[in-house]
Length: 102
Image (cartoon, rainbow, N blue to C red; front, side, top):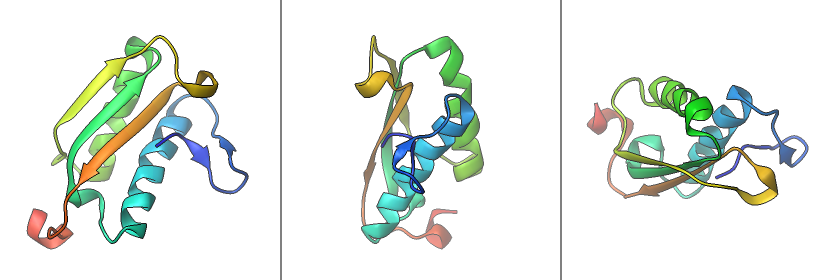
């Protein structure tokens, strides 16, 4: 998922705001499909600048999963669509709730 602001369907401001929105968009999509973030089995995160955005991705993951987060691969790419800075891809599985995850 990309960091798209749902109020106006445009990319959120560059930086932590966009990184946070990308993770929130992924969580919202999972919930619409009757999953939640605790159903995530694996994440792949694509960033346009590893040095700049890797710490922001770590921060957002820790806030969302509160320290118990799924395995993640983070890959620096030359370019993302619309010159975006981050894209989060998640794989979820059914049968796990927040209570059973903790």
